[in-house]
Image (cartoon, rainbow, N blue to C red):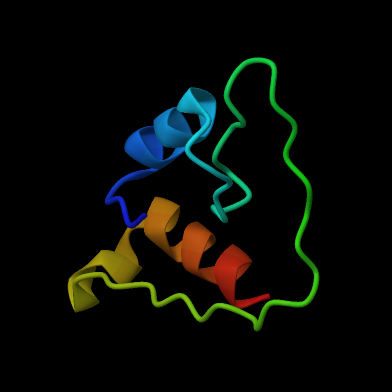
Length: 68
């Protein structure tokens, strides 16, 4: 089954429809257990921001932490 959105995906798991592969930040439904999947390829993320935002100390700090 294909579902859009983590809440719907985990809801189907809770209903017993099957299992789901989700991001590590998605909590397992109550009474279920999440297991890491180590054999999947790495995911590339992109940070998008306005060029002028780099002069904001908060944004600059976040960019620095992400780039490390």
